[in-house]
Length: 121
Image (tube, rainbow, N blue to C red; front, side, top):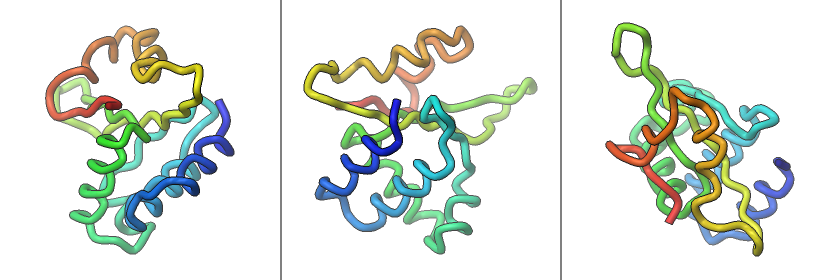
């Protein structure tokens, strides 16, 4: 997976500026598997945006298929920060293929397909 392809997709998009800012932040924070897990207050502080603006931007990115958001939980059951998977799409890739990464990890299997998490359109 390639961060450059994600960036090119964002540059070519018609996403609002706030969503592009958050996407660039997530690309910068992601690992080689294109996943990261920053907390919303951390994203807000480091981008200079409000927490509510960050939440709106993340919702837009989910709805447009740029990210897949998966909740993470601590051992005591309380929610931790979300895990974000950056989606690289090309002409040969099916819309649901972003889930294949999470389906290989037993703790995340199927948890991203329900609740308040979002899936690519």
